[in-house]
Image (cartoon, rainbow, N blue to C red; front, top):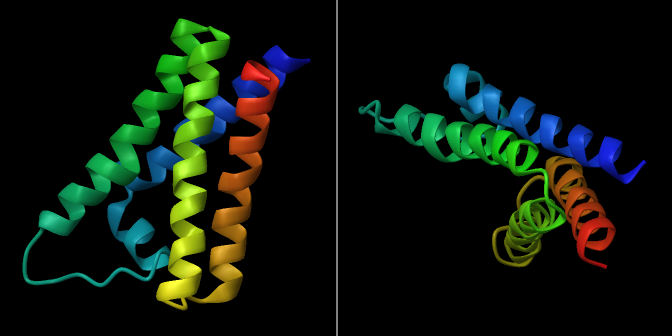
Length: 117
């Protein structure tokens, strides 16, 4: 059961990344990011919100080791921690923060506890 849930978490990571990778304008709009006079923002979306997630998800499935899935969990824990800091300092839209942060926190908890606990 752990193996199946790990693969589902990794595939979800790939799916999240594909949005940023192939649809950076849609992703930027969903994340309330505004375009500027440059296309550098699209490049950043494809890289940090897209490719990074796609390759991370594929890599953990390729490595297929508990430590790899655990490290993906730590990456999600970092993202969730960033959401908490943002909640305090930036006051972002709470509902969006709750959805994105909740997904990140749930994946972090699962991947760390199930694979390293």
